[in-house]
Image (tube, rainbow, N blue to C red; front, side, top):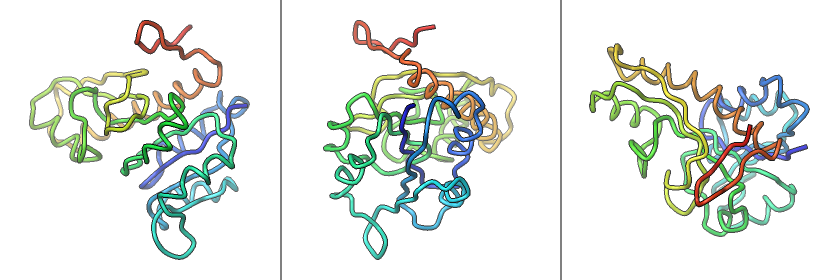
Length: 202
């Protein structure tokens, strides 16, 4: 069974999508949920499933960034999933878990990515560009924001939208499908790197 830690910063809709995916219950186990915010919707979801929650930062009942790797290694993890986590993962964690940290991004990378490109910032930029398609990307995490190798993408038509909020709504639905599908592929050992490209075997 694939042992997961999920990192979140907000309400946790992608966390919920993972927990509710019918094909993941027998393949994966979320052993901990981490957040840079001690109070967030995702923690409430985790607690309702009796999943351990860990806040990152300074202060009482939090772990500091410098101690993150030590804490993570104690969970014997197979995969770390960033599901709406807005902070950069420390380089020592990235190196230790090479090709075992994935992130979901609410646009089609390499466009509309990088530092500061998260949440509505992304959808505002996509809307302002007059792009006709958007979507979601799952990629490996490296030392830079949104620069790791792309694992999977899914598109959505936005040619008729009237606002960035409409884009956000459509993309979120795609995220809730794509992220669990990629995690399932990891659990089934179907994700490989060949000729410097990520391939999902059928």
